[in-house]
Length: 470
Image 1 (cartoon, rainbow, N blue to C red):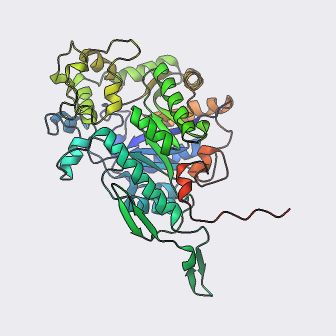
Image 2: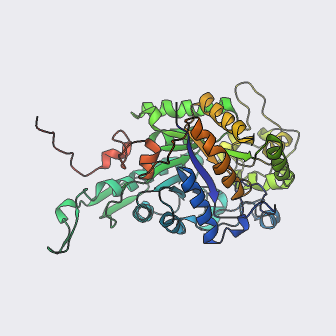
Image 3: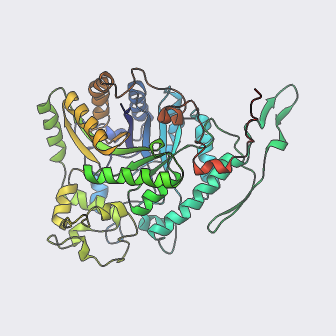
């Protein structure tokens, strides 16, 4: 029986998923500025046996007609947000085994800066850090915010990102040998110069020459995550990612995306089952089915067309309320403005596939209302929720879920109290939470480093161990 891996999808802001929930009495997310809020959430997840706490992040903001819409400000829709990387060392210090994943774009900092930041985080967390690799989010607003004259195209960003990750891997894996750091006080030797190797990297987009200043951390390379379901995104994930976060729309589409990622991984010489593929899920659970339905109804009553429009514009550059509601997205000319260059997964999902007609703008608004960028929606008692999660895994070959809370942290507390014991009873989660580095917990191995079949292994500088003598 496949074990169910669990993460939680968060942003260091007032609410998750581009939906409206912070005004509800059940939500405590207005405390997102406070360390105690995040410490409490991390400790709940740590005790319950979750694998990791995932922080989405970015510099962008919703934009309609080139400016921040009033509703985004009034409603706290994907605005504002803190830098979550800065709170992770505190959360790691006050938890025992929970992993932490944070988003960092390949389109802003130089790979040397990113490699240094994640190596530092891996040291400070004791090997419990993951990097969610994105090529950008809200790319048009970010381009303007950083003074770029134009936004890089969707597929071109992935081409650049391949090189970005290769250079980061070169720094993590290719400069220090495993035993270069000596730390001999008596002899006065900190490190062995013969076991440090100069990095020389010359690419199309990036260059670097010198020495990586951070000695090897417990994992060396953070666990590599990737979120994106476009064709180029899936190809990128199959090459680089160890854990992939796919968008949950329908069971059929999710099954196809999972199968495609695993097939592409095999083409890259990787074990297709070695990649952990997870999907977002919003769970509303209560002691009874009726109580759970009532809670979900209270959330749904907060949502409006305007909330959906702000979210969708921020992700794709398309203002749904400016379009003819009776027509599909094809009413936009291909390549018009930023459409098609950002948020590609959230455009592709509404273009119509497999002979099915594309939904109208009105139908898109209705589908996204109360859902936003969230994945599957599950409502019910503990046994009903466990049934649905098991069924989703069995039907799609998924490895687990990222919970996307609507009322934070109450939803997470309820899941930990009601659903986790049921999953343990069914054998979907271990009786005792796993320990070790984040990579060890996700792979179920005792090796904290990249798998030998991962493309990043070719950058390793440490000589292989000599063959044993019989």
